[in-house]
Image 1 (spheres, helix red, strand yellow):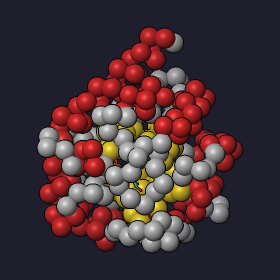
Image 2 (cartoon, rainbow, N blue to C red; image 1 turned 60 degrees about the vertical axis):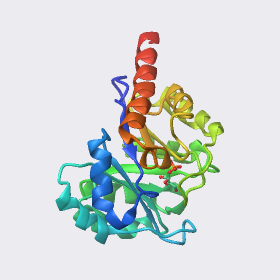
Image 3 (cartoon, rainbow, N blue to C red; image 1 turned 90 degrees about the horizontal axis):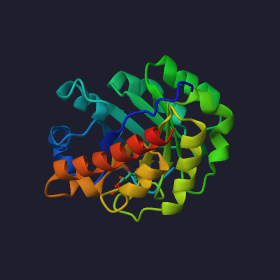
Length: 231
Ligand SMILES: O=C(CO)[C@@H](O)[C@H](O)COP(=O)(O)O
């Protein structure tokens, strides 16, 4: 992690609260509204008290949108179990939760060898120090700003200290924030130094998702520009 080039802003709608009966159409709507990637929430009913979908759905989506970046947020126990399936389904990023992982280096190696970017997620109660010994192994760190499991929850601003710490110590790292992020909370997220912005209900529930995506992007790009001028 060297070079000190702040990674660029990327906006990734979470389709968790979209109309999942027409998933591909919803995904296309997000991309046509200016999304840079799709954040796909996989829940197993064990790691979190909710169920969504797995690799068979991702595999069906992939041919319908061959160039879209699929960011898999794996809210599952035994995350090592689904790496090959997700890679085969066409996932680009595999973000496991540190709380669910017994052997971080082995899992990171497995994800990388299968051709996906490596992401690690931290629940709100997990200190950032937990992942520091392995920091070279991750492409993305996902800081949860709600308890994982459901969309539409309240943003936890006190998680921003984790983002600030990571941005200060790992200037080139992709730092993703997820949970309760929208027009009313984006400025603190951007100021803290996050560059990958997940936003669910604020985008999918908006009358004009493109307006919300543009607003989020504007806030993050301004913060990046400001931090570069201060350097
Ligand atoms: O992973 C999760 C929830 O576990 C998120 O991706 C949410 O789905 C984001 O939705 P909003 O909080 O933005 O409505």
